[in-house]
Length: 523
Image (cartoon, rainbow, N blue to C red):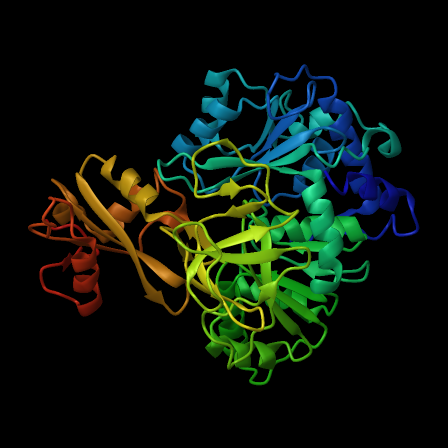
């Protein structure tokens, strides 16, 4: 990990008894974090790693499936120390998705919560060595395994790896239901952390609250920032607006890292507490990502956090940070700011040539922050010489601002990337559904909300709630459509394909040819 050595130094330095990682009210100091992470690194060096062409020979791979858990930081730091690598699994994946990832990944060690029974069974079928968090003194408990290696010296085991070696396996949505796996080098994050110190207002005193999932890049990167700087990271097991407000009341948090839907929920919760004008002046920086901030949200955020500078970024898992901006109430809706330090932007036409200034085209970047590509999957990320793209469409203004016009076939809902084709594939694998079309509609809270039109033997008889429950068995919660419709006949193009544009028009105008599924099934 780019910060493992920093953790070792902080654990032995003057801030060793300061908080490093706080989850809800459970606190791990830098001294404790360094000792625990060193035990993880020492334990992983006793395994015999599989040979993987995308990792150095002998490099161990740990799959971290705990979600937001008190042991997350020590596992992440320890597993990626030296030449080790860590794959962060999304706890919102269904058992089918997670099992498919593990089958491809074949980690040398897997750590899961005690309650993920289906996933433990999948790991057993694959013959994976699995440790259970929160399992007490059981033989396969993570805490018992870690105890065998406590005493390992952090300075010896939390070593820095080479810049060009992978330390992180991340995942993006795939069009087939199997998430794409990409790998990122230590050097790319070291440059990003160094460049981002001034951009994001980061130093050892910048206590940071990132209440989102650590399996997603926004909070995971915030954790790395804190550990690299010796600052305190604060997180929650799950996002809850009231819990965030309680953290802010304590006055220690200087940075808040959120997606726009979280900011919206915080403003609503603060206004609903019967205390108009409630303010938290300790917050100096708000970093927002995952979706464009609504101009209507700028004023409520300024009321809630009067001393905070709001920064937002556009980027992608495979590209890293691309642009950064400071949105205001008059910022154009498509303006995502100017190039992040060390990043160069270029707009190219359909022939791959640089487009004239102001002309829409495909967004390309030249950047040291770009990932090293996919371990598996054929996503939208591609490189052309020194340049890379994920296929997004945009245009550049004369003053260097990027206006983002489209993100290919991807939808951003609640700050999370969703490919409608992936959801369609999952829906049609459910027995009652033979055809599905998934699109997105504007939503005040989520930015974009998923809507599905389905047909088959069962939709009319299932009901909305039952179908959502059924979808949750094969999809993460954020990929489950918010509304379902059915119809008697699909509109088709001249080539026999479903006329997607016509369906989207029907949804927009509430056409009677679409029937919203009832909350409860028909009797």
